[in-house]
Length: 151
Image (cartoon, rainbow, N blue to C red; front, top):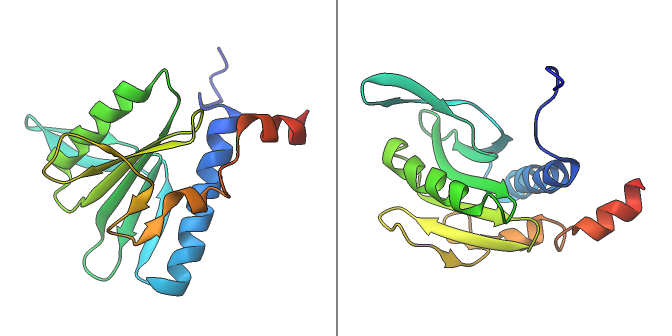
């Protein structure tokens, strides 16, 4: 195994790039105190020991001391349940997190989570950000479209 590389495939990274770029373009017009980053390390304490996680996309609010307010995991069908668990776990340890999504880029489905609920709804509309996330992915780039570009 190559020790230099990560594990995310090209399709995963392309959908992630669309999301982060379009989040930030949207924020520059509407919510200038928000910024989206990808795969950023977040430290937290779990059972008295310091831990960290790295969500695919995290939105930070700079209007107050830096707070993570929005979380998005980008996943495949195979890893969907693992990302549901990770997202629910995040609400327990990130007190300012208000809303989270898991995006399955293989089926173009957004699963929306809110603080206080362990259930999700199939919905691409963020109440907190007042955005339809499906529009941020460029009307959704599907694997066959990407394959035509790179092969």
